[in-house]
Amino acid sequence: MRKVIVGIGGMTNGGKTTLSKSLQELLPNSCVISQDNFFKDDSEVPADIRGFKEYDTLDALHMDRMMGDIGSWQEDPVGFMISHSCPVKPTASEPSVFVLIVEGFLIFNHRPLNALFDKKYFLQIPYETCKERRSSRVYVPPDPPGYLDSYVWPMYLKNRKAMEETVDDIVFLDGTLKRETLISTVFADIQEMLLVRQR
Ligand SMILES: Nc1ncnc2c1ncn2[C@@H]1O[C@H](COP(=O)(O)OP(=O)(O)O)[C@@H](O)[C@H]1O
Ligand SMILES: O=C(O)c1ccc[n+]([C@@H]2O[C@H](COP(=O)([O-])O)[C@@H](O)[C@H]2O)c1
Image (cartoon, rainbow, N blue to C red):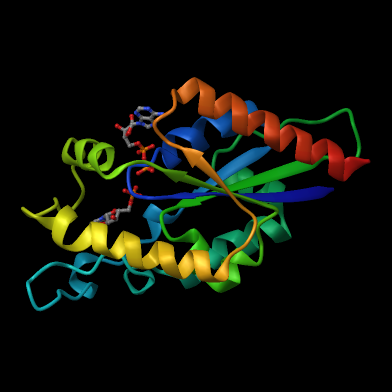
């Protein structure tokens, strides 16, 4: 059995979830773990002196639980996929390949998680695109006025700097490209990686 972990990182609204879901549909025996599902409850997230909730930091996430889920997949991919409603396909070729797609805005800022990736992608979009996409999205709790400009964007720049100082081998993707272009490019790249590793 071969196990491969692909990271789809990127800035908020870069298109991580969209790309990851499509890849899961295209890659047999794959499953997605989303960092967004590990946010702490609002009552546990402190506010800064201006009153902005500090969501854009690893401290706002249950990274221990996320790592636990990834560990469960590593131990037993089939069991994990069944319990997470990911389709399991019997494969004719041996060894079977299982792919875990881990997506999220701070996945490359968590050292223990970083060490696990076989391939890392980072979706980036310009500020204007980010602002436009984010303004049409409703988070729970919703963004208060000025949240992107005063808190989210500066935190993105800070987190990105930390990532670039510590992580190598990231493939940067232009998140303004058409969905279909992004999906086919990354799918082909992953397939190539799977073939190379098989040789
Ligand atoms: N390649 C793309 N081109 C245009 N819009 C996109 C693209 N990818 C995603 N979107 C849109 O951008 C918004 C955020 O996408 P999403 O995948 O949820 O981003 P993320 O998970 O990175 O926050 C959604 O409205 C989605 O439909
Ligand atoms: O999902 C939540 O519980 C949640 C609550 C408040 C804010 N968020 C925002 O979620 C953003 C990261 O998710 P995403 O999908 O936009 O990459 C981050 O910028 C946070 O400000 C997310």
